[in-house]
Each structure stands twice: as structure tokens, then as C-alpha cells.
Length: 427
Image 1 (cartoon, rainbow, N blue to C red):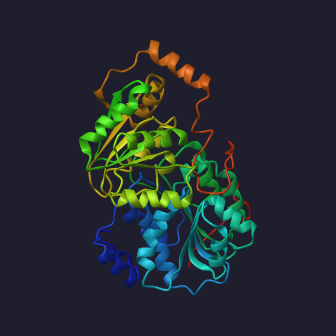
Image 2 (cartoon, helix red, strand yellow):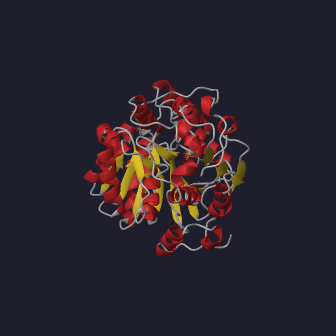
């Protein structure tokens, strides 16, 4: 498909695409949209920033525009995403197309009042975008039934596993009809992800538009070897070279992100922070200020690794390297969006040499050295052992900012799909 007019989308959608200056689909959109419109289950593997939201969003909107109005406390399509930020981004993208139609798009996330959400759901909605934890809360309160949901989307499914939503997914799947269409999108494909795909999808079409672990093509990557105690001053020196550019800085912990943000502000750098200890309102206000350029530096935990789409983001700093190497790919995917170029710089302390090697192994290349020299094994090994002795938070064990009221811990086995294992055509 060379342009969106070839898909046979409803006129309202093609007009919306034209109004936004979108005429040619991205590779994931070109391959996914026809299959979804045919009613096929789909497993989509694509790096962040490739246009996945419209790949499933346009076919969903096409179908619900031709359907009747939803019954009270029901939704025709359910989209699950791991974080509040990603839920908001998806809902905003769909809202832009549904605004001049009767289609209702609703979002529900933790960190926001549940009673207003219950009141809105009482009338039913065409499309519901939700974090798994808050959705379960609403289902427990009988504010919603999934008996009439004909389409399920699991977006960023790999991160939902990392954040411990495996039990929530199992419970939700058991409440869905057998006859449904299921779409699953992920940036990486582990053994456990394959098991989940087998449990939830019915003879799916598999689409892979870039190799798992491959970062955005236009991201310039480098590493600077620096002691942990010198990282803050080094970061400030880089930020001062690009004071007009937006920069996203990743910290490993919530406490570390907040402390760094306050330190940067005392040094005269305009910074804000988002992490799991912030309320939904605080996170939304900070992101709005960042998008508007009112603050130039956003310090965040991995809660921001996906779900933030800011085209003008020029720099991503990995102040702390992630212990899950795939998260590095998601982090740097916040820059070089929509065909733009970007720069990602990693700070590597002695205790993080093992993390750096894991990242380079995943991406199959060695990063350019921006400064310092690689730490020797004599320094790196003891530093890593001391870090573990101090019991610093491990990302796989302590998810942050999942966006729901629940924090289920993952198990080794893939979830069974309960009573909702077979599914078919949406529409």
C-alpha cells in the first residue's frame, strides 16, 4: 500500500489523515491495517516510534464508525497499555480522528479518581483505553462488563510483563468473549512473549518491521565513562551546551529522579520529573510543561520509556543504565521520532559495565566512546558486587509507575486465556 486511500477507510478517517498531513503509511501501518480490517489476529513486532497506534487505531475506528451505539457499561474495543502516559497518548491519537463523529473514546488509568470514571462508563463507550490495574478495579466494582467487547489490543505487551501485569491479563482475558479479534504489539519477543502470543492469539499473522533490539536509525549513540558521584556535574555540562533543546534524562529509581531534578534546578537548569510517586495530575502537568518548552529537562524513570511522543526531543541521557537491556532501546526511542534525528548519550559508572555490555550485545554493536575510558575488570567487578550488596533496586523485581492501583508480580508461566481463548472477526 503506497497511500492511505488504498485501504478503503471511511471518509471521516481519510479526511482526518489528510488534515494531519499524513498521506503515506509507515511500514507497520501498510502491513497491519489490511490484515486487521480482514479480521485477522495479529502479532506486530516494531520498535517504538514506528506508527503502531494508527496501525491498530484506524481499523478500530473504521469498524466502530459502522457499528451501533454501545450498551451501558460496555465497550466495543478494549486497548490495554502498561502506563498512564501511553494510555493518554493512544487516546489522544484516536480522539483526533473521532472528534467529529459519534464515536466515544474513553481512557481509564490509576492515579485519577475512580468515581468519575465509573459515571462515564455507565453510558458505555465505543473504545476504552486502559491500564490493566485500573481496569480490574472497575470490573471488580461492576462498573463495566467485557461481554460485548469484540476487539482486544495489547500494546507494548512486553512492558506489561516487565511491570508485573501477567495476573491482570489472565483475569481480563477470562472475562472477554471467545469470539473476538486480538492484536498484540511488542518491541521485543522473548520466550515468554511467544508463550503469551500462543495463549491469546488465534492463528495470528506475524509482522516484523525491524529486528527486536534495533534502535531508531537516526539516533546517534555514545557512551561516557564516569564515576557515579560525578554524573550530575557531567550531565549539567552537557545540558548547558544545548539550553534551547528538550532533553529527557533517565534515572534508575524514583528517589534518584526526584533528587536529580531538584539538583538541576538549584544549578539554574529548568527541570521537572515524572515517576511512580507522582500523581496522575502532577505527571500530566509536568509533561504539558515539557511539551510547551516551559521546562527543558525531564528527569524520569522507565515509566517514560514508552508513551511519550514529543517530536522535538533532541537528546536522551541514560544517567543510569537500565538493567534490562531492552529498556535501553525504548528509552532512546523517545528521540528521533517521525523521521527526525536525535542523540542518545549513556553515562557508565564502574558498576554498570555489565549493563553496558548487555546493551551492546542486544544491539550487536559497540557504542562510540564520548569521554573517559572503559572501566577495568578490577574496578567494575567489585563495584558491581558492592552495588548488589547494598541492595539497590532491581528493575525486574520492582516495577515503577505501572499506572494502575494493582501491582501483581509476574510468574514464570504464560497466562492462560481462561474462557476467552478463541476469538474471531471484529464487526
